[in-house]
Image (cartoon, rainbow, N blue to C red; front, side, top):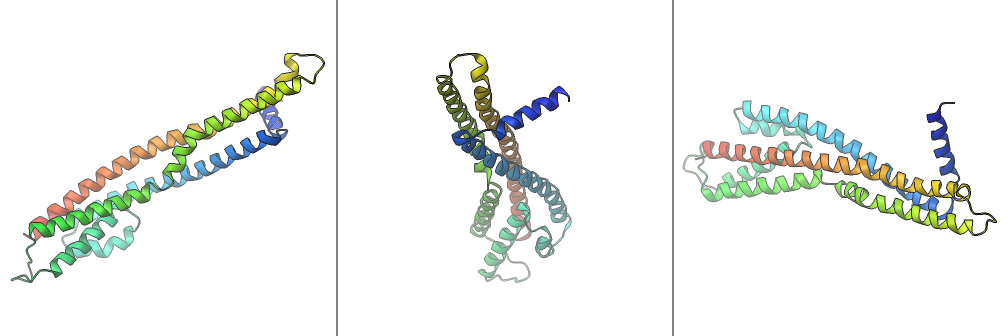
Length: 232
């Protein structure tokens, strides 16, 4: 048996012998870790899909000559932030046009007040899309900040238990407390194992969300520019 295999076996063996309060700590850390990895994988796939579909939607928006064509294609890009923003802006544009009584129905002219209304609709849609992207991010932040302390609590309680057990021994030696301390330190290791990926993923996803927010702002500005050119 290789040394690494022996080490892995000893770690698993110590975990299998943990009982009482330490077992509760390890199970709690396991729950945090499983949920965090589930969120990490789901968010990674979501952001990857959003990046690809946003590029496709922007290309469609720029090459289409009519807003109605883009509106009809929004169903194909459902779940993409830019398509959601466009839908909100397009609906508000139609609502603003319906409130007008233009002299030339084929070419209605929007006032500054109408443009401001469309801009507010775009801002509300952007905020709503960001709220969707932020879902479950708080769990990653909580995992990254809390699990090291939960692991430390398990370690402290395990060391206390090991030294209490030492009081019942006739002879005091490092061999007597080493197994208990080793088992206690597993809690710290598992706490870091849960926290480190959560912190890394949280920072990466926050960066991606800032990038997407910038894309949404740029798209909103481009949409407003198009509306002002077409209805002024």
